[in-house]
Length: 79
Image 1: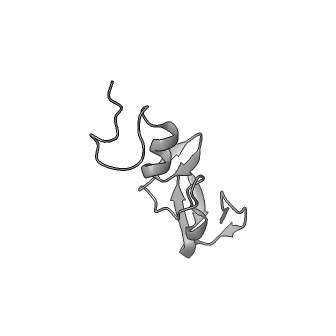
Image 2: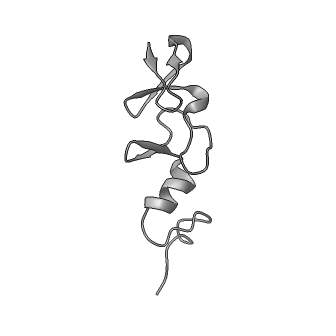
């Protein structure tokens, strides 16, 4: 039995979620920025911390000009 990467409590096999090479309780695997509960394999990572891919990871670490809304055409700055 390992410890949850977020809360530090024991994670039992039946409740264990494995992501980013760590063990988590399901409700503890949340986006660092917006606190949205994440699913294994359906999120992004930066410096070992989980983020929802859209919009948080893209807004914080994505290409310049990303505004987090609209289509991909709307998400780029025009000169």
